[in-house]
Length: 344
Ligand code: P6P
Image (tube, rainbow, N blue to C red):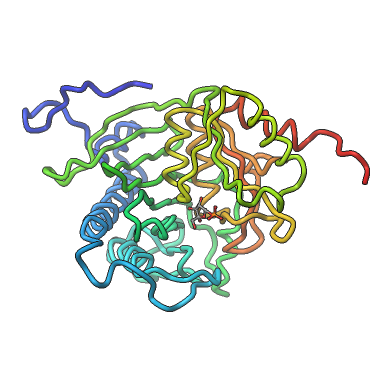
């Protein structure tokens, strides 16, 4: 991990690395593909700034807090902020000519941008506001994004070409709306953290080549579901209860819980349950982008049984169990899952 010099103070006109410049530096190229990716990351940063601004005023504006009264394709109650954030991503990409489709948790089918968008452009998969129930109690929430190369012409509108394993992602990351707004991304060359400087309206590089600790003290899981889990996950939880080196942290919002694990080490789990063996988190725009990022930071991500990035979803909103974080801690969870189970 390379901590950007603390004296990087833009007002002193020192060398502050912006996101678009960083992407081009990473790619060591200024060709069209590099320019496109840099421009896409810039658009994502713009979406993040617009969402951060709306969140900062949530308590003061009627159309930000609370529910819309509708339910989304997942059957979940839709928050006003979910709708706003989803529309922000569409708006910032609509005229960009950079992406051909956007697919999100809030839309049953992808949003198409047919004009000036030849085959071979990009597709954006995203969760516009993950953990939106935290908005009403002023706790951290996040946006998660995954960028893929569009393949095929998808005439039937079923977006089957999106049903690819996570290893095919071109870029992925998240925006964390916390005490400060941070954008964490990777284009396959390490993980880099940008902090929004509101006085500049720019995301400035704050940590380059972030590496997750090989082991950490945090385990992050909703133990309220304990009795619905398969036995191996219960066994893992009993193990950490008995070992003083672990501490439980769980905010109910994936991005904040994931960022803690990335910075301090440990493991986040959302196991399957008896009623929902595939778990709750969606592969394409929650687990896979985070798995891409964590592997780039030297961590691991799996379903408990197989690497998460090898999972090929069968439908747009497919879910999978998730075990993600420090390599040693993910391996510990997997050791419980892969133990020979006593025959019933
Ligand atoms: P539970 C938020 O709804 C979310 O999708 C993730 O952000 C979070 O990790 C998870 O669900 C929380 O789910 O069942 O623990 O409330």
